[in-house]
Image (cartoon, rainbow, N blue to C red; front, side, top):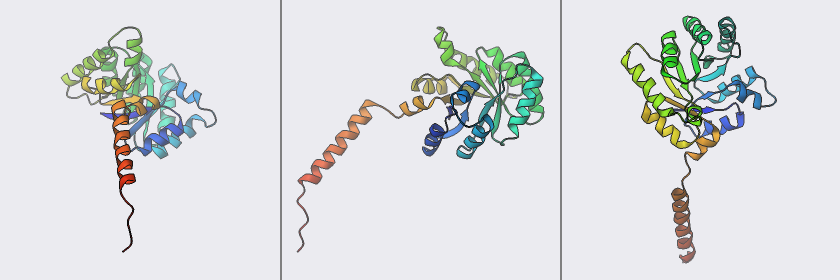
Length: 224
């Protein structure tokens, strides 16, 4: 399981990159729009300087020609750029055309196994099932991951990776891995929560308290 960060905030990416566990970054128009100042291309190039891994940059065109034109432009920004397109008929056509150019694509907003299969057959590098949004409407997001993984396993020619998206909490990451996802992309807050546990905090505090007590009880060294 690889961990991606789902953000366009350069400060968050910089901090997570220091931890040494980040394999990529996903962005979307909403995340880009939240960040003031830098433009889209400048932001993607800045991320590429911090993270040596796939960086998803999403198209906004709704027709295949427009998606392809945007995708070709985005891919020229940096070799690690992955062109992100929606799971629509136009998106699938764009993926197949971009794949023939050697441009990798992330098919996003996947909500059923058929969308994932057609994206894979079109040549998608990754597909992004949105588990959190499914669970928001009382559907089983992990069952979707399991079904996609099972379908992909049946065809040895499919090399498309499953990227679990719309992660709501740390448990989603573990459940995604167990269900067969290759990658989980999550917000910065969720990633921070992965290393938090009250027993870790209390245990660490107890160890430090014991050490300080020992230091205070030891007599100072005396010169002979």
